[in-house]
Image (cartoon, rainbow, N blue to C red; front, side, top):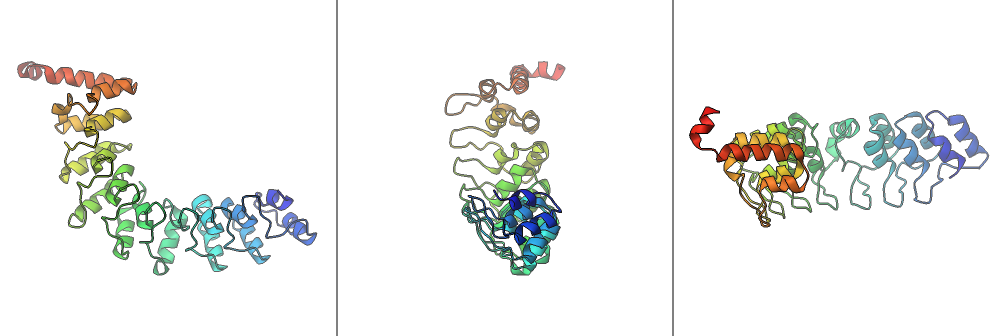
Length: 310
């Protein structure tokens, strides 16, 4: 590692870096063994001064490391600083350069920088382009708990992506939005019912309701899905219900909502190994879930008149 690499990690070390260039101890084109250039490091720091200084001294805005990542990749995904991204683009930074995974700089979870780029450069972007995982920029947009319904609508309306498009793991946009618990976007997708199959399964046979128990907003997510008619009693390839899945994850709040919505008759249903949701909870050492399911099973097993008395 040259002195320039060490210094580039400091926000305002222009004199020291410039001195290294003048004495030829370092140059704007220095790289690490992994191909990471000065511009990658400067772009990832989130300070506007150093990237501007390096670009003015001949550094390349599209320098690639050994994984095919460019400074715009670093600026958007790591620094999340729109001004740094803007300077790179003004100096020829290419938003279409793909890394080894087929990802452009915008194939990442939305943040302030990527959202500003989408808004300011949307006429230059094709949101339907997929990376090696089969995910388009629109997939990443819905796969965030922070994406607003307005932003989703804006970019979906000008995208050629189908809402039914699945990634390499068989997940639709509805699966991804549900997994993150983005209730507003989930509702938007379900409102487009003619274009979305709410009962679609991934390769293991899980519907979107299984994904709905995987986040901290599971109660709200589950309620929305059931309100839109998603089947609560589906089974995956291992004959496990969504109760089994919630018990495996130890999601107590999800289990409470599912039982409140009428899944009490599923408490004793066994999967392909003969295990009930309670037994799944025991095998995963989820103490709170185990106690809750044991009490729920005991309550359901009581004669009706005794339940009424309780």
